[in-house]
Figure 1: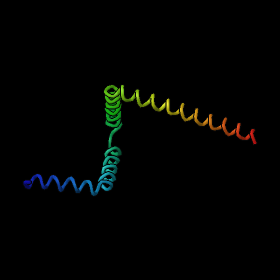
Figure 2: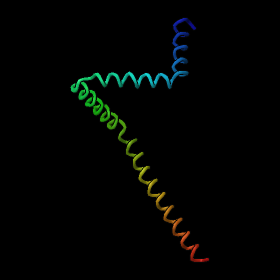
Figure 3: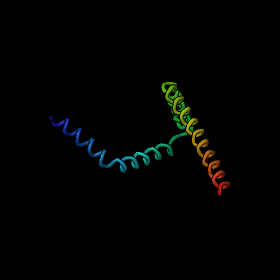
Figure 4: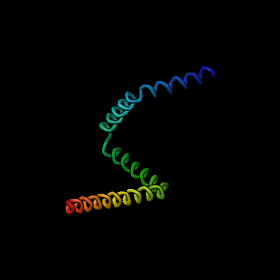
Length: 96
């Protein structure tokens, strides 16, 4: 490896070792930037975020549909299991 590749590798390892610290510094940096923004800049930032969300939903529409369907079906299955368990417990109580 040459010196540049070694430097990049060391940099990567540094950020992996100090991930939490770097995340907190980034949060503070973002908070400071938001506090100093004008109302117009904040509105622009929010609009860009909404546009990015719309692009993500458009690109991943099928995946999001499958996930939401699985979530709804899982809720139905868990409710049915719970209802069956309650009915079973009621019937077992009648036998005693």
